[in-house]
Image 1 (spheres, rainbow, N blue to C red):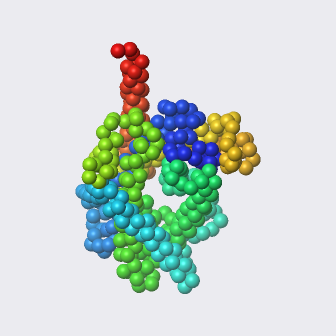
Image 2: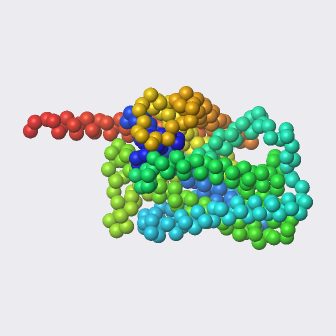
Image 3: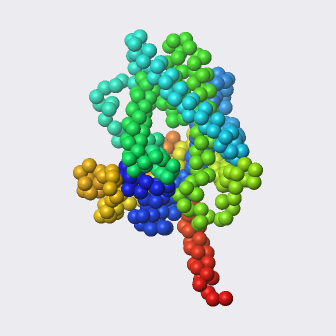
Length: 416
């Protein structure tokens, strides 16, 4: 990623990298799936937000933790807010985006602060940190979670989509990616250790792990109010992240250069607010359909797992193309000042091959339903079916656009 962003610093990022390596179809498909993977990601983020928002209402609100109607309602309202504010323009929506960015850090700081205070007061860890416990488990229920771990530390490449708007991207992008990678890895390790310090490893839920850890630690110090503060922060950060990603994703077809393959309506802007309102509403409607699809016949937790799996598959297929592009470009000349992988082409091919294999495994694991899924066959059908539909739609759009382009070319050369 560092070398690719330095080789091709123009706007488009992953789209440009795969297009330069494999041609227009590969570039289009990577950009299409990168955009489409956001559609199930939005409701999964809102499900996470809804689960943590319950802690603002105390013990009584926890009765809604298994209510599909509550989670579907929050997801639909959140999508409407994200679309509506972004249609009004970034001058309005940015307040929610900025608030989400600020509040994103507060729960992590609360968790780490409480864990540090508990450790200083001699409180024992709920999870034993022994040498054997640091060896990765090979049980299927733990291996399935690896794909989510890989997904949680991805996304840094999105900054390359705005390469033309970054000062000296060939120099600054690699530096920024290195710093972001180090920061993200550090905070994930510390937060994971804090959660395991507060809760037994075998009893940490996927959706409410952080807030339950905060509640457990706050209870030791008689600070129940801090749980509500953390829950409110997670709720605001979830809404803010949804709005920010909604804004970015609606512009991705244009940034990645695939707008000429999409219906012309995607290029329409609002006559008053000058925003891509058609693209925003299309995103909201399709994301709502993913909510209905994932929730139909499934419990809340299983619906959340399905949404995450859909997002991972759509998001990581472009990663396969990205790592393959890294191998492909090693025989191509690089401009002066390009960041090269230390060790030369052999090291670059080795690292890219490792990334390809890890990504392929993560995609494969995403098809495996959770061990507690009461209807695993239905979950696999939903995950595989939705993934195939996303890929098929991209192929169909590309094929139709190519037909239109050939017709236009023939018309332009036909004498009148």
